[in-house]
Length: 98
Image (cartoon, rainbow, N blue to C red; front, side, top):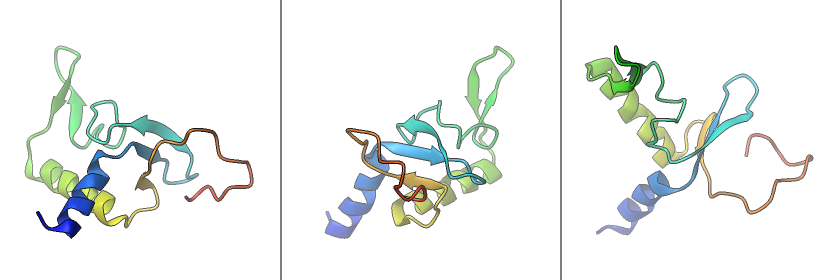
């Protein structure tokens, strides 16, 4: 397997932090593909009739998912950034965009 491909694919498996667009605060951390990830709510996942989350299988949802995965792999979005989990909380003077 190509080393660049392996590196890009490995980014999808890292612990993931979802940040709010307006403030850059981490609002959720976990597995990128988790149904609990707020990135997917309302765009890829919606609450079904039974109250459970269900996948929206429409072109717009698939396009959104593809675009977001590309952003994670190529790190093009400051609001959606995969990072390894921290062992300790960063100091208050740390750059919030990182």
